[in-house]
Length: 442
Image (cartoon, rainbow, N blue to C red; front, side):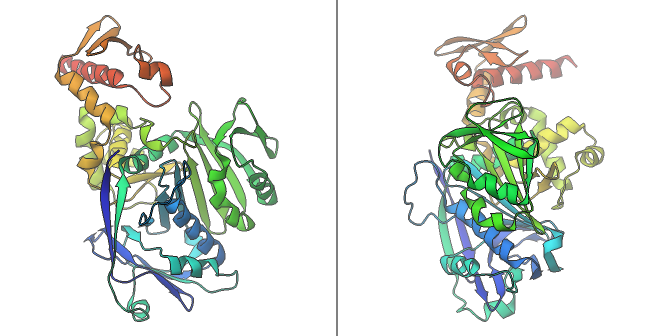
């Protein structure tokens, strides 16, 4: 596994001084264009204690390695923040690639001025973490995303630089998780103290299934109809400090996969954790994006759709389809491709994509999908031939028989995963050739 390097440069460290939380920003894009240190928001957070605790939760996930924990000196990944106008979204991904966290500070928790919309990284350092942990329910909290002059004058003005190695699986995970989340539905909900009792009563290890039973969520050691798989319940640990503020807990899951999402409704905000199917399994290998990336038209469509995005809190697919002059399915495929470049996420509560701009090179990220690269090599080599409803893909290991009807293959990958981690390279190659044949016949 190789790593890219993300460089963070801040004009000064973030700090909390006399109730003023100044979050230093590092590069990024805004509606006004690229910015070295964008300034998005300044105002009061009306729910200081839950906001501080939830921001710490996002920062904790960025530092965590849930599978085979080990010390990684210098691996300090800073959360991403997006200002969508009526809300601030803080996001992070665990070092192991299996947990995605997001805090949505909604309009009801913010009272202030929006200077611009866009995405940037924010510095969360050790002294700031300690200060956030001390914020109480009655403490005032003024938040500035992007340092203003008043905050900067309390510091020494020294430039803060961090160079962070970002593994391929971590980068690919951001793309995969938004596609997987878009296929989830709400599977259960608990209110107030019931949510507290449920989370605190979960086992720390192993795999369990959770299902709604009346007004309760029941835990089972086997899968039942309508249940959601929860592998490694300890990965929900950052929910624990937030439970005292929780209004409700919602559980989301897809119909045909084992990922899950856990959303705490807090006063004026939401905190969401999305978990991979297994504690050891990162989102990077799930393959949910591959079919959309394999279409030739998706790249051109992504360029068109991308120009229409303006950091909206909710991306309306129907409206985009009308404006772009394409079908809703093509817009969805374009959004997947934009997701690979970190340009869209997915909000489960609102069942909608949202626009953001992660600081990754889109061409490099697309190359991080080795199955797709191998499939294209098979196509270029002329290895795909059709026999009726079947495709025969000739490889160095022998011929593989692919059924386009159900996406099955005779290779070891398909027999091991049965489509649960996306299509194999042979299925992808067959689909690429089949699409090209349809285009030629038109």
